[in-house]
Length: 138
Image (tube, rainbow, N blue to C red; front, side, top):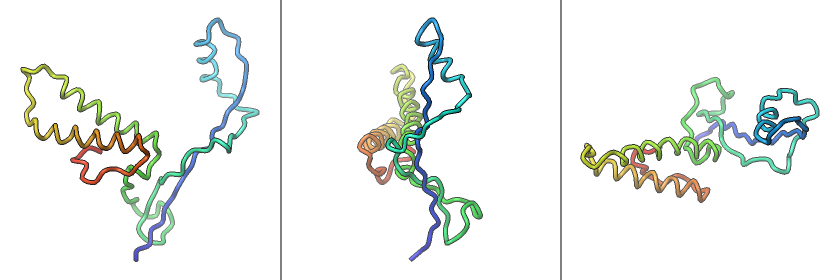
């Protein structure tokens, strides 16, 4: 049996409640985002996010003492997983949005990638692990 050192993380929302003078709601929101004074901040432990893996190393070693192992995406933060997959889906949409006369160089290859991307998107939405054999879609 192998040993691995795993770093896992969860996020705790930190918030503040402050009033801003502004002509519109959008302006007040901008002021809040640009405000870098967090004095009086509060931690919301009841709304802590999921636990996810942020690092993995082979052996019983100090973290960051060796190159990290690649982490399967279904163990990473869900929001990051969605953002990364969004890029894949957008790229595929761009390919299939080409005019019909442009022709796809290798349509079976792209169809395989589309089906793999759909399966992964469905897994992300279901909170499930990535499908096996993702056809190169990450």
